[in-house]
Length: 230
Figure 1 (cartoon, rainbow, N blue to C red):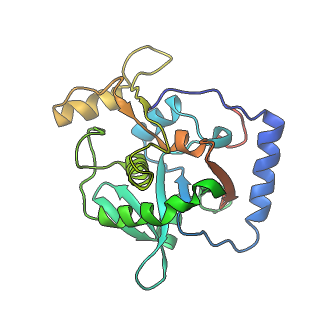
Figure 2: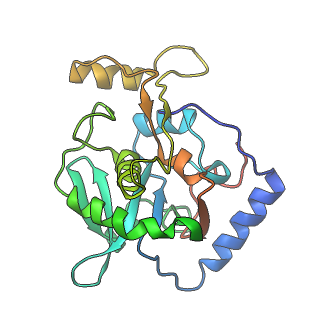
Figure 3: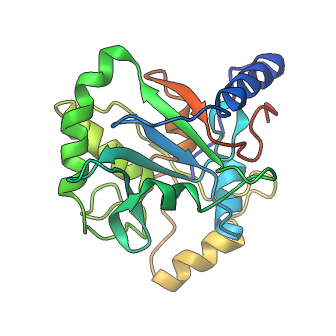
């Protein structure tokens, strides 16, 4: 949904990092509470449209994000905004949604850098407090509904005393090759009987994945486009 940015990693550096992170994936990895799990979902025309106008870490096609946390029993879960609303999902269910050619989850793990880790506990508290809130079908940052990256934005905004940790940017639903709205998006908003929120403030998983406050610390598998420096 967001405008494409230039990836700062050169092709050799991006490929080297991809290889190192995948090699690390051979050992058992356990996410920490507060890690952001960026996912490449194979979701049809809408996902393809998002991928075309957004850029993830190292060129990865990232269309979903959730926050890792521990539930009351101490099990690792992912707090996420999906079609049924803000939900708490077991980690293995989250990881099993999409896989690469080698059968590995198409998920990258982002971890806040040390100066920002104080925000993790209050952000997770905010995330659990929003459980059950509806999914934001119209991508309105002002309503009381949430899409995946909006949930991350809102939780860390509140944890940081109202100062955005991950900034908003103008959204776009226009195909850069044609200069016209993607047909899939035009049909989507027409069904909802709302105008396309072109240019309105929003946020997307790819943009968050490239944030300077995060390190990408693990790759479960290889998201599409990753390391190709698209």
